[in-house]
Image 1 (tube, one colour):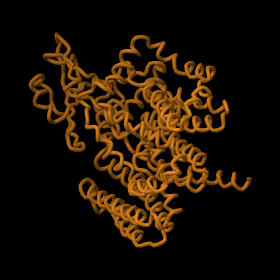
Image 2 (cartoon, rainbow, N blue to C red):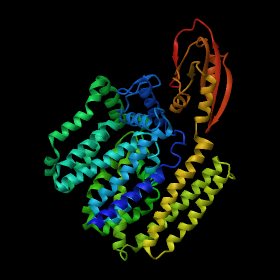
Image 3 (spheres, rainbow, N blue to C red):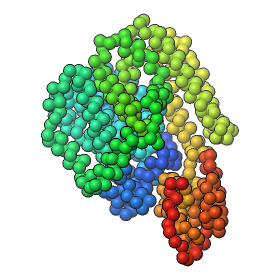
Image 4 (tube, rainbow, N blue to C red):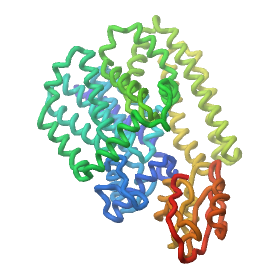
Length: 537
């Protein structure tokens, strides 16, 4: 018994090291890519500087599109680690910790269901080396924190109904409450609730709902969740629940995508383990009698996939909650493949061959991206290109292996190298040569100083964060503001801006990605009239 406990502790330690090793490289060196990263960072800075802890403030206005948990986490991280300074590192630490925690809980959940340390380790390893997972774990947004609490809720739910211990019911409702405070009741409560309901129905165990319906734990959920909406009042119902939950789900034609969007999106983001989907399909057919072990992950995957497929608004990150389930199902299928080698020889060869194709495509993609955006003969780029080509050649041998265990080990090693290649090589290079808005924002900040800064056209969140100024999204009609002022705009808006304010002069042009950012300066006159809102342009 002691040796088993030591084995499990060692497995958890190794998983933590692997997860941190994949997620942490250059975490504080890469600028904010996702617009929401800069929004949460800016809200956290306002919370620390101006005390906006209950209602987050962004660019001088309340922002209640999401509950404040992520803002609180970024603020606490910045106070503890950054001594009050909000940075890329302090903003992303909550996501890193949530990602590592999700990997550990996935191991514990898989262990409880599959009763195999090896398969549980494999499930957690698959999750940690899956592209969308480690990509999102490096972003300062709500998705990874949400995933960690949903995964914890699923673990607590499973333990509660199998062990019938109240402590797990308490844990389940606490996790659901924190998930709700991260992204709202639609995905924090309703989604997990439907997963639990479908699972119990599929097992003919709906009577266990009585055990889960525990008033003291439900009261704890309400105590955690209710204060914030009560403080917001009608704004919570209109702005948050209606506009950002109901309308985004069923009334958002501008984001409408086809029902089959995730049928393509999920496999591509489950890279490189998408290669084992043929193994999953064959194992589920050949080992139907053993499907009960993965009934919860199957319900988890199916409910999440269907709900977000019928939603108008679809993004890759929205189905992140099903990735732990997919990892557990894949690990179970691989375990069946090792048990039933003769029956599943064809599936093994197909999956390993598919894996080779995935790695080759990944390596080719790196080459194409480097050729387009990165000077080819910098030492780092040359090393990264060489590594990609070496990996592609190395993994090709797995297709010829007769020993499937060796093939699986090579696949795992390749997945680890691909993940490290993305976080340690690709992201820093891509950020430096193409993606980072930081250099031009810092230059604008230095040039503008204390003068007003306006924006003509749509405002980017990273502009607000990195210039550390409240950017005014409107310009007075006519001659412009009084005194000296600056305007940021894009090259495509320059002509229309000059028609409105012909006296503006160009201070500097900044090439950025596939566009050009222009800083302009003006000396305003007195007697200007109506404000003109240009934020929609």
